[in-house]
Length: 456
View: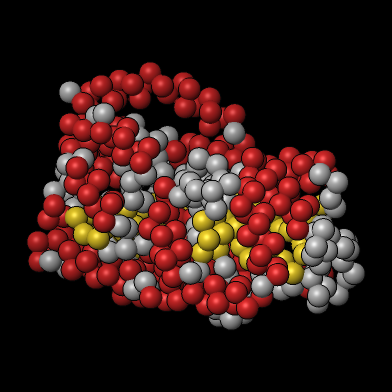
């Protein structure tokens, strides 16, 4: 009954879903593919396909080491990474080039997911951070495809919503073979919703093992000169910010430069398409605004801005490395009730991490950073302003905090390896291994042409 109601509601909502996808320019690419219209090249092969789903940029970055390790273990297998967003697609094509193919996640209509599964014939499905699509998971179960949740988490908002349909969720969760969760809280929540205890493991957060685009932790891809920073200038990096937070940060910065005029603020909005709005805010605050995309200081040009100014990071894929250039870092989604973004990106570079009270999406990491002395959680913008001022008045404190933040990252690494071992042991169990090696189950040669041929 639960699936019947779900599919009726999904069908009724389909005009709205289509309208939203057409209205958003960034969602139009690959629209036919999302509805299951995939080119029909179909050459048989013995190579198993592992399908991995990561929603957007953050999730893709998280699973990059995991996918590369799987590819190293099974070099003859084909790996397919699906995303929902364009930023996710770009990350797959940049960071997993020659390792995995990309496709868009199908819309969760029964006939669409059936078309995908029949076309790609995956040997296994891995999904990141609890993307629970009922029809897709049911289809995998019907075709005997094992499914694994990695880096699983349940925010309070999602958990409370799922509890309202607990009977239905228990059925959906029965189709998942392994739940590899981030924290004890996530373990308890997924069990409360009906996941079988013997399938649930707490392995930790794979973001501790996240790699940078740089080849070395001590050598970020982007340089100070590329941002037009003079030798005496100190950078505050505010990453993944939301609109109200930007207002607050500009207020903090205006207060800070009264005593520290050599401080420079860099704002990286969570959504790049909001750049013009951020620029307007900066100018309204009476500050100089400089877009990262307008810079070319790596070739020795003079900085476009001098003195106090706000750099707006309007490029994709650079934030993780930009954190390395900051004296301090603020992570957004925490001064507004969003739940917080990736606190580990600045921590891995040994930077003091500042964040607000809303950390539901990263509560365990926030606790570890505060406990170790590598992070400071503020209750509001006034306290954040005070903390920034203290940071610039006490360099030795910042060094100690940065070292503590990095130690948190180092002490909690190895999650990816645990997840990999659990999944591999499941796949290589005799019950599943014979299926993986059965050529009759796979039609993979030409998979690249199927995916690429349907791009729009």
